[in-house]
Length: 355
Length: 179
Image 1 (cartoon, rainbow over the protein chains, first blue to last red):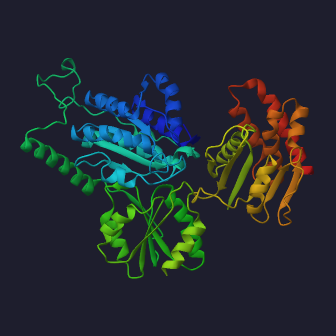
Image 2 (tube, each protein chain N blue to C red):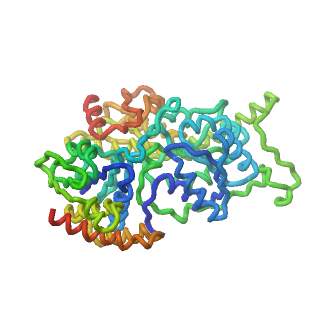
């Protein structure tokens, strides 16, 4: 199959099927409802299960149940819907079950609006639900990258037995771009006999598996939290992904930006280069783990006088950028989050004020 | 080289579809493309617009405030977007519904009665294809045969309406070249 022109939401649905995931439970919400629309037709065709839950809270527990039983499973939603799912996500992380969540972000807080936003950065990377858990969070900047991240998310979720989130903004879901579905990203679900409640008749051992998030004994709970922490530490060591732009130049400003916003920054960087202002960019592809060391090192460059976090939120990722920099260079934030994506001209104007 | 084409009109005029056919055709021709709809709280009868970006290298910002070209299917769209079109672009005006001009003298403004042409072909619903074809012919952004191929693919499940839409391409092409 060559390139096809697809809407991000539909491509995300197709990518899950191509990755070998045949179970999808969801509740519709703009701007990602096309995923459910697409899969309600495609999944039965592919021999899978499409189920619409009665609410996002219900969906998150349906996901928990399927994941605990060893099924490959995913869901999609948008900001307010993800808020409702956060309770279930916390349980899933605590019980160490693999599942994939896609958040096609819209403006918040509250019902907010339906246009693109990146205001769920904190929710995705710092918790959202209660307790000491993390999700591995990947942020696509194109429809093709959304496809690849969705396909990669399933084996990662299984490797860590932890929820993985794809964090896209409304444009990633609504835009059409040419996509290919790489065959080599298809993966077989891992063997879950050691822990899943997948039925005694399918596995050899006589051990009873128990999936739970309740640990009333403080030592046991502490042990579970240490086990979780060990996984998050390993993610920090092994799963950091990022892309750079114009980093070989003697950039005066370093931009950190992700998702759709980073593409607008790329255009701004091209235009600024024509004016003789060199700007470099690091685009985190994983938001947790955040490329702390890479951002820190890039800011150390002699020519770099300022670091800017540019995001469609009121300043969330900027806190991770500051954490990475440890004060070695000044950090600024620029952003908007009403749904109006900043233009390249606005970014250029902002960068000029830093010099 | 990058060109951006904005299609704008009433919801229901087939704006998203004609834009999709252009994006599809450009992809077949080997270009990088992005199709960006307006997905605000519009409804049938409201303003719908959609931008197609065609480029020979990876597309940066998908947010386009100043497109190179505009295909305006109704008056509110022309009034809203004509001032933002880049110098030297094409502004196609659906003169069946729009009696005013863009008042721009630095663009190639063409007036094509696309709704009337479509009506003469048998259905006003093909007005979007007439407009697309007139625009493609005028701007020479792509080979017209690519548009024809993509129309056949797009309507593969509705074969009955393919001849009507191919006729709309022919008439649109003629109108675009002579306008």
